[in-house]
Image 1 (spheres, rainbow, N blue to C red):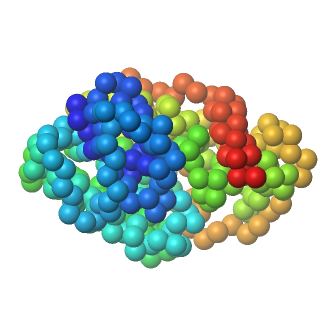
Image 2 (cartoon, rainbow, N blue to C red; image 1 turned 90 degrees about the vertical axis):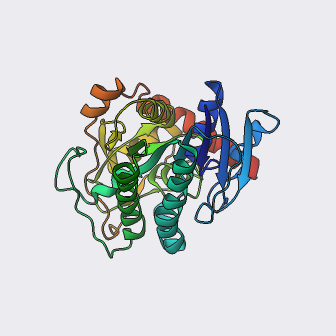
Length: 313
């Protein structure tokens, strides 16, 4: 296949580039680099099957030659980005999705949308299944991301129904691993960065809120299987093993040998209290479930961040 991956220089996008290239496909990565980095794809320089285009996907997308699939992963996705780039996030979810779908229609390509567990908001149903419609504040501080992704899902299904486009939607739950930004603002880089600097880990509220962490390699495998499947409706991809944020902080301190402990700060507004995917559908439709345990994944991630911090000295 010849595939276009928007957001291809980002954390997940760059790993997808690697995965598709390793499968023998040709890859075009497109990214405007506001949160992505060429560092994530510099090892692909000189690969004849890889091409990088620096472009904002909210503008008209032109790609010469055939395209078999577009994986739309362009979007800032961290809470710190919600404050810095709210309009850009809304535009990439709306205009960027529209442009990517239009390219698929022109090329006769299959489209895969990177959606998110954030479409469930602060859920009243636990764990979250794909048929749950969510509990989202449409005007809160996280709404730029939540509603951009909800709109993107609606646009994707509209193209499928009206134009017969082959579409796929993956709802991604908390994912971590190498190539995350150290100052990303999400819990894994926050905790690991603080621990490696010997600082106390900042836990919001009592830390009783839960998350479920999926290692990037498991997620990428699930995304590939979804693209190659016949499933048109959303599919959760994530790790159903649930852990409280306080327990997670304690685990990070243990693994890094950080003696600084934990401090508590007020819980941010609209922060989801529960987050756990029901992956029954992924198991049934894709024959997929995560393989990498939390300790193994964290070891790899901590080593990556330690290397980055050493390089920065």
